Image (tube, rainbow, N blue to C red; front, side):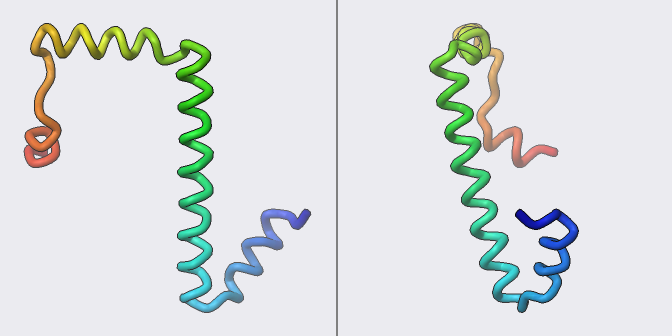
Length: 73
């Protein structure tokens, strides 16, 4: 396997289009890894407390619509 410095040097030799393609590939790779981690955490129960707290907040009307939060910095 190449070292990080060798990989960085190789990336600098890529065309702009190749760098974009690499960036898209890397983002998709990270998305898949994130999804797998969420599945593992859900199956293990690590998210149960967060889910219960979220349900309680919804029932107590302690939530705002996402649009309201995003559009009101």
